[in-house]
Image 1 (cartoon, rainbow, N blue to C red):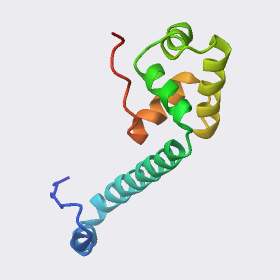
Image 2: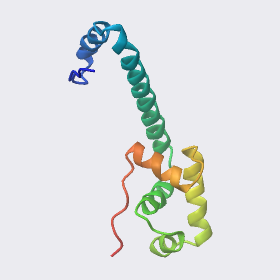
Image 3: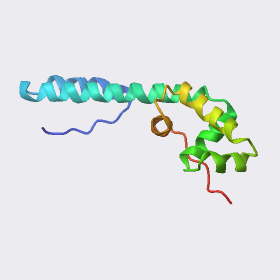
Image 4: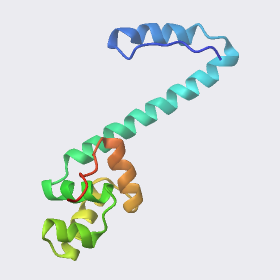
Length: 121
């Protein structure tokens, strides 16, 4: 399949549609499959970003430390919180992201653009 570079500018949508329409039949199915996957990916990013915006400041703070690889005990010490409180903030973030577990939470948070906290000093 020959590739074409198309900038993601709003005015280039018509160009992209015309390029897809001009594909031979044997390439059209693959192009439509790729376009569908891209659409699903963009929808997942939008949903993850919306979830990140719903986080309370402390939930985001705990999540960023989880992303940096810190265990609940280390996060509790750094933020001067009890361990169960850290777990509560993490689980609230997990619920807001509709994540199945902490690994899934980290994946969705990364997709949303949440950055890990800086290393402990």
